[in-house]
Length: 109
View 1 (cartoon, one colour):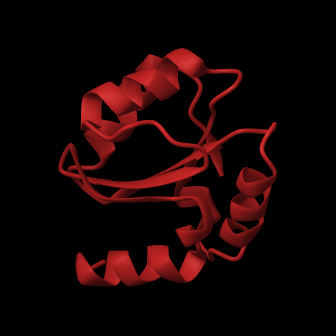
View 2 (tube, one colour; view 1 turned 45 degrees about the vertical axis):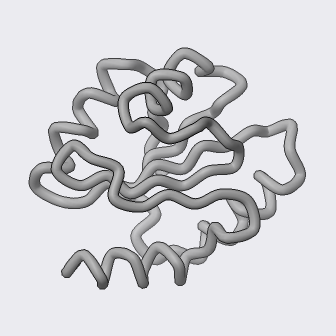
C-alpha cells in the first residue's frame, strides 16, 4: 500500500484516476475494526495500487478526501475513485478484498 500523506499526493491520485481507478483506504491505528479491515485488505492481490490514509496522522488529508468526494468521513473507509469521482465507497465490516475486486470488475477493470 502507498501512503497518502499530503494534499499534493491526493491531487496526483485524482489525476491518476482518469487513467485507472484508484483505491483509497482510510485507516485509524486507534480502532480495532480498522485494524481488522486493514488485515482483510492485505488479501488484495494488488496492494501496491491501494492508497493508505492514516486518519490520525493526516487528518487534513482525510478531511480533504471527504470534502472533495462528498463522502462523509468514516474509519475504516474504502473509496474507489474513477475519472476524479468517487464511484464506490464502503466502511467498517463491508471492507474486503473481494468487495474491491467485485467493484473493479463492474467498472471493467
